[in-house]
Length: 169
Image (cartoon, rainbow, N blue to C red; front, side, top):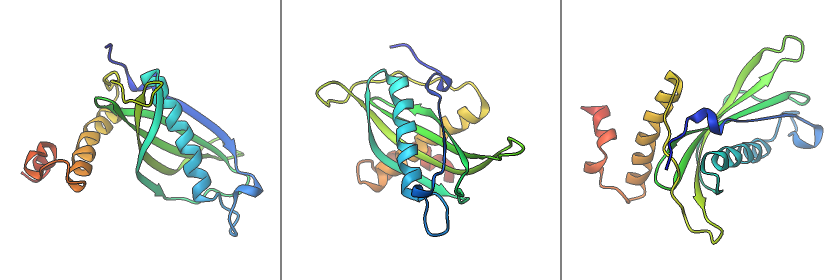
C-alpha cells in the first residue's frame, strides 16, 4: 500500500453562521460546530483511505473563541497520522475577518476515524509521510495520544506505552 502525505487529505469547508445556528448570545452553537467538523473530518479520512470512514471518537475539542453570527467559518481538516485501520484527523477552525480577510484561529479538534468496507469491517489504510514541521509534530503527538487512550481504556499496559514513558525519562 502506497503511503500518502497529509496534504492529500486536506479538506476545507467554508460556511457562514446563520441566525438559526446560534445560541442566546448570538454565537455559533458548539454542537453545530462539532457537526461541521465531523463532516470535514469524514471527507478528509475518506480522501486518505478511499473508503467509507466512520467516526470512532472525538478525542479533543477546544472552544477557544466564540464564533459570532454572520461570521465566515473555515474548517481545515487533515489526516495527522494513520495507524492500521484508524486515522487521526486534526482540525483547525478559523474566522475570516470580513473587511481585512485576515483569519483568526478560533477552535481546534482531533477526531479519530476508521476506514471500513461495504460490510462495515475495518480495512487497512495507507501510512502518512509528514512534509512540514507542523505535520511532523502532529504525527509524533498522535502516537502519544493513541497510547494514552489505550492505557486509559485498559487496552495497553502502561509499561508498554513507550512513547508516553519517553516523556518522563
